[in-house]
Length: 207
Image 1 (cartoon, rainbow, N blue to C red):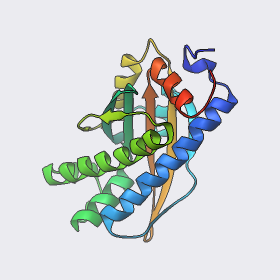
Image 2 (cartoon, rainbow, N blue to C red):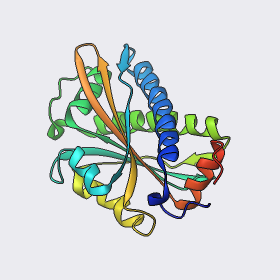
Image 3 (cartoon, helix red, strand yellow):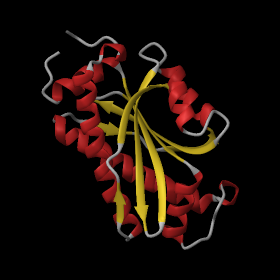
């Protein structure tokens, strides 16, 4: 049976998506460790299939300010991946990488934005490359688009664009440990329906 929307995903499909989420997040953590030149540990990430409003709630509510990095997928998989970072994660990464002492979004300037764009690009690319390696699919990614805004505003972009596909996203929540810092990061992945079928077929699932 061809999957026509996210609601048709069964427990086995979701377990498979969880597994590639785990592997992709592990590769992203390794890339973060290399960029910061320090040991970065992580817990097994939680992977969920959530509605957009549920994802917004987990980001602290619609008015909570977060940083979003958006990358679009193309060729064999079409859709988008969004990297969502709360303030504590952003400050930890910037301070470690640039030797600054920033503790709020208002202190972030052009140099910090450039560094965060590169970090987001490398971490998402690590995640996508792990999916491509597992499935044998060819996946290209766009130049990252970064914004700092309310969680509700940032997540309204994929909610509107993919409204005809599903009101759900694959939501991956990670917890990182670096020195004495413990920070969360979040990745949402929204393939279109054709890509979702290719993804499952690439992982050996008969549909």
